[in-house]
Amino acid sequence: MTIIQKASTSESAVRIIDRLGPGLVTGAADDDPSGIATYSQAGAQFGFQMLWSVVLCLPLMIAIQSICGRIGCVTGQGLASAIKRVFPVWMLLPLIGLLLIANIINIAADVAAMGAAAQLVAPQLPVHVYTVFFGMLTLGLQLFIRYDKYVVVLKWLTLSLLAYVAVIFTVHIPWGQAIFHTVVPSFTINRASITMVVAILGTTISPYLFFWQSSQEVEDMEAREGGKPLKDSPREARREIKRIGIDTITGMAFSELIAFFVILTTAVTLNVHGVKDINTASQAAEALRPIAGNFAFALFSLGIIGTGLLAIPVLAGSAAYAIAETQGWTYGLNRKVMEARQFYAIIAIAIAGGVLLGFTPIDPIKALFWSAVINGVAAVPIMAVTIIVACRKDIMGIFVATPMQKLFGWAATILMGLAAVGMIATSL
Image (cartoon, rainbow, N blue to C red; front, side):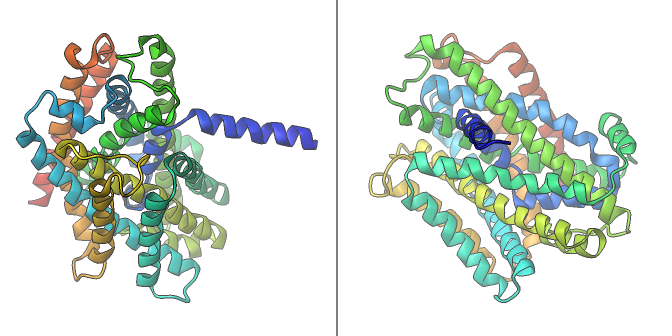
């Protein structure tokens, strides 16, 4: 390949990344270290039998996230602001409170996983040193880097997820069995399998993703010269709605592709060798070393760190957007710290709370389980009111949700409702 061809290929990759935005980052952030732990447990415990869940989740994710993106782009407001125009604040506040609690617990689990993964690769320092470092790093990036530069960092961090794709090239994959279990659900219906399906749904369709994508659409719009909401600039609608569709489909497909490969990798390594009790992503990485070799172990470990660096800002940021919009504060990553002090204070509180939680006697695995329960309970009403808002002509004008978005959006809401019931039932 000539130098000119290499340059052309590099420029093409940059252009593709540049066209993608909130949907890509949102989808990639869904595969945070705690999510990787859930998918690892699915593969280790059930082998190929949970691969079909990836196919089930994909259209549901695309529907609800495209609705959230559409609300932000059409109204020029984040999801919480749009909901507040239809429903009273007192209905929204308890849901936002649950979101903040669940996000702090999730951040705690993620920084702990990143610290454990870093110590596996470089054991010279204690886990807590790495945990504090990653917490301060993610906070510093949000506080001190301009939004347009910071979004580029987040976009390129999505490539860290490719580590989980690379792992499959280090192991033998019986593709016939894998494809069969991907398209044909086949598992024993019992408490363990139901709990796992519920866990996969809970970690895949999470409330923090709803608020993040809608607010990022607003941030991107405000960052563009002359950017306006589609209600005020309908001539841009066709191009922008198409962009949101492509961006969201790409992001969610990428998210579920990574989930597929994590389940697949752990199925053909850990499950086959009888390692079925995995509680954290770092445990999965460590268990891979004697089975799949040092290269697979290193890829898995570095993937945990990369996904954590991507997901923690999204977790903290989504809570800050939701609270600031509900309270009517000035907010946005495109604003300086002193312009949106309360907004950035929520980000700092969420990250600091997550880091400090790791120094308490609280069992992180149990805390993460209850975080999933909280997310599952909060997701259902948030999804329901989001779809209602997206169908209101007084809010969305002519750009209300499409019939397919409504169909799959309500299907996702009903399924998440059943999952929430399952979460509560299994917790009791």
